[in-house]
Length: 170
Ligand SMILES: NC(=O)c1ccc[n+]([C@@H]2O[C@H](COP(=O)([O-])OP(=O)(O)OC[C@H]3O[C@@H](n4cnc5c(N)ncnc54)[C@H](OP(=O)(O)O)[C@@H]3O)[C@@H](O)[C@H]2O)c1
Image (cartoon, rainbow, N blue to C red; front, side):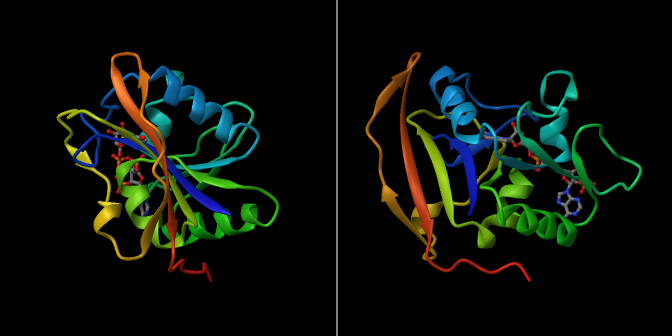
């Protein structure tokens, strides 16, 4: 199973200045617990946004970068989108695979995911980069709308969308 996991604001915004829009401890806990022990796939910018640019612990990290000289320690390095998909498919045989960003990776992998775990934040974060509006995408169906809960000062909902038209990786 391949699952995208992310949070977005009211306008489907997901980031600004190569950073996140909000600080969300509860959502962070959800992210950590959900991805723990599994495979996480990301673009280079997302790896570089982590503390010390280090991969996430206790997870298999797959990183896509355009430049073949960019190879990071402790991760599976790939340098083309085809190899990225292939690596995901290989891990999917024995593991749940999570797509963890950023914006360009969420967009390109969207046809291949089974589900999107989307934490919706009831606020406008003034985003510069956006995810696809899944409510307007005929391939996606909301199968869990979640219940509003407070995460610090912000109201959030843990929603789940299902891809009704998943494209197989060949
Ligand atoms: N809200 C959330 O849950 C969440 C989660 C994660 C990230 N984000 C946000 O997303 C933003 C970052 O997004 P981003 O798109 O800049 O970063 P990204 O997806 O992490 O990384 C883009 C990198 O991947 C490479 N790449 C992308 N597509 C490629 C392809 N087809 N072939 C080869 N290389 C490819 C790019 O290379 P080139 O530049 O050389 O093309 C670039 O180095 C930040 O604001 C971050 O905070 C939000």
